[in-house]
Image (cartoon, rainbow, N blue to C red; front, side, top):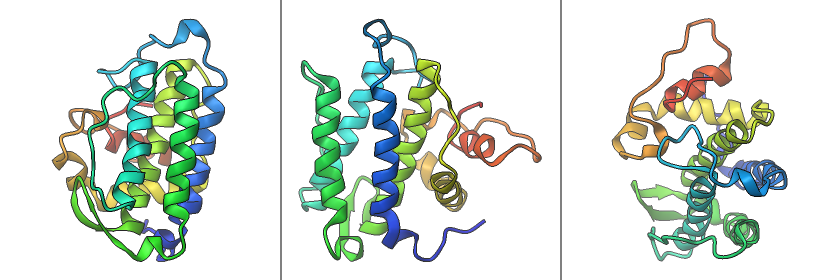
Length: 193
């Protein structure tokens, strides 16, 4: 499986789709679910959402040539509004004409913005899955986003581990050769479906 050649150019559309899918899940969170654990062992639902909003804000920072930042607590008194505001700004940053051809300084060094954006699609997709698991919702990933993200994960396996992110688990999980694509993708990211 290879990532389609036009994937970096289409990354803003994929990202918008991934953020919209996650946003629909946020509407289902009840007051008693903010402290529920997620597949990211270090984060409950609220902490996971804080990470996601920080990632959205980093998109804006990186695409504005300010580089990656550590934002801390970004949810304030209205976590869903914080997501909405950050999501709008991140989608706008990726959607600017010509933005995907620019080179940006990311946590992984200099990257073509289209490749960085595909990494952020992957981030939003898998954390959307984490959120769905925690909330007891449908965990089936969007087939188009899964195809793009799985191909990227296969080609970037070593780099995923090199970043030291707790979001990718301590190591890959096991998945059988005949497992479906989503199960194999999640295994690369340290998750068991």
